[in-house]
Image 1 (cartoon, rainbow, N blue to C red):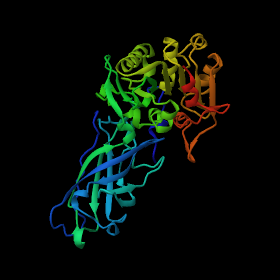
Image 2 (cartoon, one colour; image 1 turned 180 degrees about the vertical axis):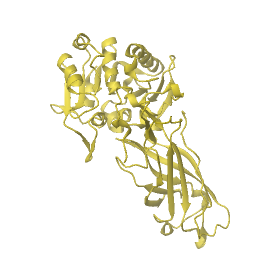
Image 3 (cartoon, rainbow, N blue to C red; image 1 turned 45 degrees about the vertical axis):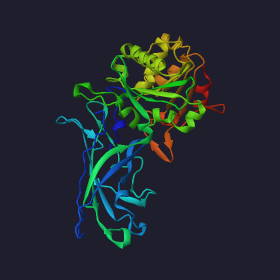
Image 4 (cartoon, rainbow, N blue to C red; image 1 turned 90 degrees about the horizontal axis):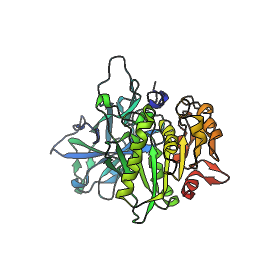
Length: 411
């Protein structure tokens, strides 16, 4: 049975490089290896709504010369994937989403440069392609060590009809273009963050994305990766898409990573996040009148917390399924002056929407709210806590105005 890492309460307690173990494989049985031929390969990943998955493998076969497309089928190569925790798991503890299995090849094709791309079966909720695991006792997502083993089952046809057999495969990096577009940074306080920088040289907006509890660090284990904030969901990535960038007319997107989880000490983290905003604004051409904050779960709380501590810092705030109860007083909520649009799903069984999102909406002056019955996207129903999916897709709307457009109009 597959248990999602986020079905565990992310709000309560809840490596920098690619964590990849080189994969090596020899030619399959029955193939005459002949001359030793070594080929490297890359793991290609995308972050879907449920988290990052490896969706294809690219073999660096261009160096082998022309290959006949007719000799390449979904059965030419077999792929086995193994994913294990990067940190020791204590006896009795659990990590969800580890795997050791064969991954079906759904398509095989040649690129114009001559590399081979093997598309792999993947889908929301399907075990075997994810790059993250969830450690129950820590309430944390961690990047799994990935080891891919490739076996060639039938020869390829090369120049002049000669058979081409790859005798050794060497695993390379994990590539996710959306994630890789965010640079790595560390603030003066030691808070790690990722930053997307638009191509425009004029002053542009800054969107601050604050992650959920599962994407913070686990310092007792020495684990602070500056990675899971972009790989666990599309929260920050959504604002860096071409669609969002058109709405905001190019925007910086910054995703700080907590050294634990935001609700552990909002009073301590608030000035650290403020200094990240100041640092990015000082180093880049940021329009300080158009700084926005959005966050989910723990980050939904922190988005509200930031507007209580710094009432003039943000042009708009979007708290998603945020925790309010016992953390932010009614007096503080009623005093918020930052334009606020809250989002949650009524079937959220992690953070009670009535006691948190709806309660906050009732108290925050002139706030907007979008409440869903369930979290469903592309026909797949997610846990009710995952309402950030809608914001990452610009779905919430009031009187025909969608949430990104509303944010962009606030200044």
